Image 1 (cartoon, rainbow, N blue to C red):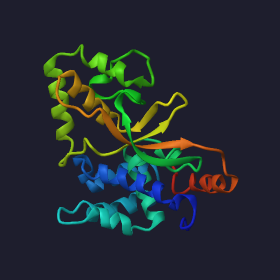
Image 2: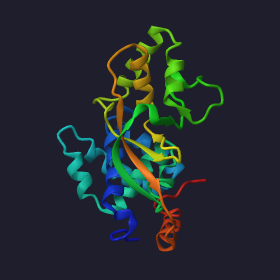
Image 3: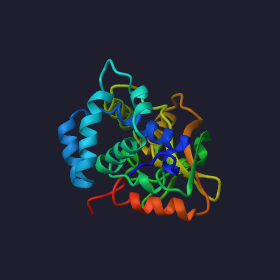
Image 4: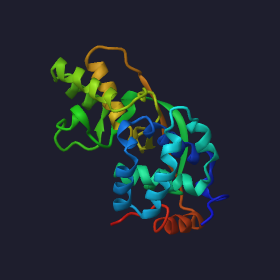
Length: 237
């Protein structure tokens, strides 16, 4: 399959995929390449695992230049790697938005008060009962009820999960009808900000987010997307 010249080779869409992979490169748990590849193979396909196994050591080299390598990566391989990590390892269905032809992507600063968390993680797991998605203000109100030591420990746990600072990496979300942004990837970073604010520490009022806006369906593009669901975006289920 050749994806060059298709909607999956659009500049902004590829930038979202590269930004996501670059963010994941900072996390320490993916360093166990063989173990991660086995997990990916079970959740996606052997080809996804093989591409991860081949590319990840080169991208993760201490003396390497991952941004340049990602720019030079063929479009098809990039999407295989994106799906291997997002779906195969993280169990996120980002292909339903980042890889979907109905969405157009823009990188923009978003006021944190306009953010809705799709997933409650860390200190927010027990917040708000069945509220989903959870508005940032609701998450913050809950964080402010927690003991200081719990908040401080949550910041340490977040930092220990990566070798480099990833708090300023862009999130991935979609624009909702009420001008709010639903975060699909980056709920941990939003939770980190909640903890900072609850502790009275400096925290960004705006967050950089790759925001997807949904348009009308293009039959030709959608046909390609359907084909990709059985290959590039395949799952084991």
